[in-house]
Image 1 (cartoon, rainbow, N blue to C red):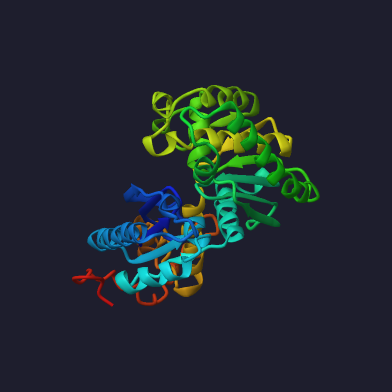
Image 2 (image 1 turned 45 degrees about the horizontal axis):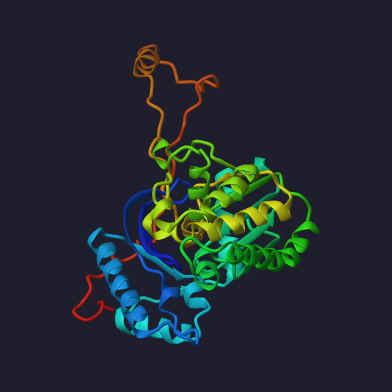
Length: 373
């Protein structure tokens, strides 16, 4: 089936279409996204203003049309901290549904951390043992630890890279005083949370699952994305500390010359580096691995797991009846003998194909001023 995942994040709004079925690796089919920092549209009371709501609704309509034109059969739509923490978040969600018919599922911080952890566990498998996952978003920083598919403990703190940049780093390049004060704030926010993790035990693997971590690892010498997802990428605390110092002295324009840094991420790169540096220091890990799967993949995999219980599954294409040895059968018949069962070549019976439940209806084409119901 073709599944669409609409991700309303703090920095980017993104629709990803994947071809997948239960038990298979999701394969990306098409993508449609644009930079949209909703936190930049917050007014003094913490409300997303009308301009921000208009931009959001416009993209949701675009995404819905894109999914429909590419014959998506199912659509998961969710939003994270940008809307979750806005004062008028419920009103924004209601307006989006009214004007687009799309229901955005609001994930809590712990749900976001849990689904990201779920994707990490599926990527690394049971052999990885206890995993600690760290994810720096635009508005929040998620952490999760566990030995199973879902974490034993998952939490979120307001240390997103875009949020911290807006609240603390006003100059370009930032002043030494503002950087020092931000470092202090990050550590004071993280320390009590990290103590809760220490009580659970030590992880075998620390994974980083956000664009911020990927960019920092690339700057520090990790392989580019063109090398593919199976190349092992690491981020070392020693390199991170060095690059945090360098980035703090750079202007936003200078950061664009660093490998793996986009226009949308350049300004908030320093804040992300400071959070990553503090996290590795407080969790007392010298190295982390960069995982290519994150929240979107976690939601996709969870949805595919649900399909296992919702509808019957066809067998794999190669499962069928073994071809009979016609020459042996002919010789046996000519001799007037009854064929005997040969244990060395057991017959493989045809796999019974169950009756499938109806497939999900295709996404209807959008109507003028909204979407078809």
